[in-house]
Image 1 (spheres, rainbow, N blue to C red):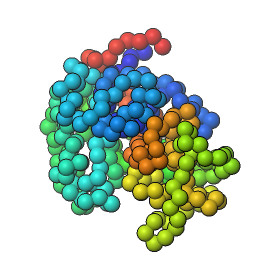
Image 2 (image 1 turned 180 degrees about the vertical axis):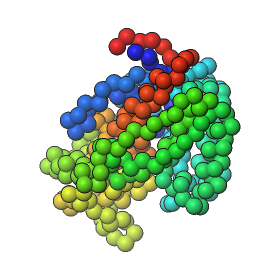
Image 3 (image 1 turned 90 degrees about the vertical axis):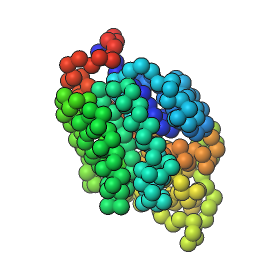
Image 4 (image 1 turned 30 degrees about the horizontal axis):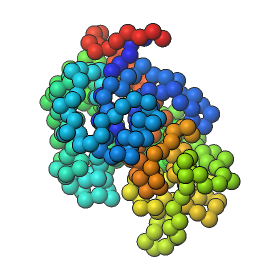
Length: 320
């Protein structure tokens, strides 16, 4: 079958990349390999890069995207990236894409302009759709459209796709020359059938702390300035955040905050995915990631669109 070449920007520890690659288990379900080949990846954070290399088994360029953008390959089929959201998030400074961090989306625009892939996918927080970011969203859509892409966007609720977490994210998808229409994956769960917190992590209740496995947790106690959200065993998790400074939600049963392994479960990382950092950096990596299971379902729709393009000029033929 066709193997599509992918350039991954702002890759983090590899949540979206793992999802597109497939070949992993989550809560007893195997997510089959998908025909995507990551040929170039980059992230600024050294811990994320170490974690990426260890788990995805291929290299990633560490450092500023601007320091590595000239090393992009000549071509690819798909560009992906979750450009930084700190200036867009409701918890951020609300500087929009004019901000220092979120303005890095222009590196994605430059990469798409240079590589002219058949498709691109840009991920960001729900805040991009809020009124105060109206101009930012319009700017992002205009910049990508100007490169010759039919651009659409959709707000996804991760829990609708088998992610045990109330997490909403925007995916902006572009198709070169609008030669075919991108059809987003249909949700297959609703709030009455979402995976609950206890279904996701109950087997870890009696497990001892294990730093290698990231089954470690913050000792921050409940207080007015330390965060007080608590899991409900019968409901899915609250959003796993990157910058909660140790103030992750409390366990639904035990007198402690959730561990990083439990947070990774809520983000749908497989249990054999190991994070190469201490608690705070692991917390940041997990919270910033695209849930692999969500990315896997998105990948199904990307395959359909890419395969329907008559002449995917960059695709290789690989044996099944």
